[in-house]
Length: 404
Image 1 (cartoon, one colour):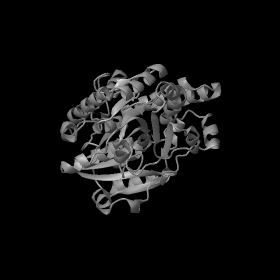
Image 2 (tube, one colour):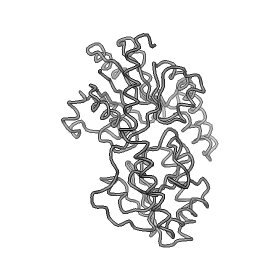
Image 3 (tube, one colour):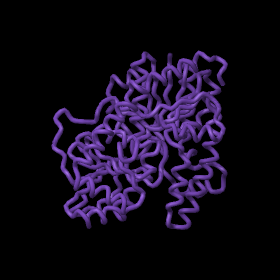
Image 4 (cartoon, one colour):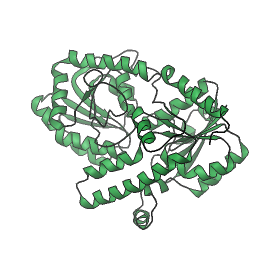
């Protein structure tokens, strides 16, 4: 069976939630004996040099990466106001990339074409015109949820109006796009339930992100009690919004109760403005070479998301590493973990600060949560628990020639 995986960004190296989610599917299909070709958008501003990707991956994936500038341009954003198009989506369409995809589809035959996320759906017409493959939409998030939640949190009235406009257009597009594919692979049961509630009646399955191994070093360092950290892509708006809320509303309450505690902030493409938060109690590390090494000696992972959707892969990583995770309800959406058993949840600054301080004062309590999290990940997010169902889903879909 041949699969064409279209990715909204380069999935290698698998260093953030989106790339991990895409790469683990590729690996799982390879291990099942599938032939997988990967075509990715190589986004300007965070380009991956193809020469930095291992030769064996490039050859095995027949890898193609096409440069695309999706950065927001003020003039285009302004002119878009006078159209009915979703600016979020239109930035990912390129006529030249469409032509290259067309040539590939005319030259090669695939059984399944998988779109990794909503921003690949503008290419559905050229796919339908040039391929008879089953078209699968893999939903990483319910995209318009992210923008609706950011609009609710906007303090500037004009910004709030603009974000609501973007969210409304994106929702309309997203609700139409799901009906243009043959099948849906949702990243969480919550997302699948939403799509089915809104009329999706074609074949669908939940396939969460998989963690192929525990995120631990062979020689584990001693954990520094009283340390908290955040690790994530800091060019993603929900992460920016959440960490600013945490540093301004939550962390001062923590330091007031536990003056010796330290918070470490790390992530790719960290905007320079975050270095102003550096103090005796806040270490701004920026991009780190190894997520596993960065997490290893720290006690508490903080995921203070106020908006977003889908599933937070960094929480799964933190759980696999045995960290005590403290998150908002939104941050933990779609994972299926139990508050107080596998994770600690708080939406109010005072409650989140209280939980952080409790973990510092009662390390045994924090360690118990971390150990339960490891077991939870092993049972629910290992390749062995996820991939067989997905592979069976693909095979049945391909065998059903009438499916459209």
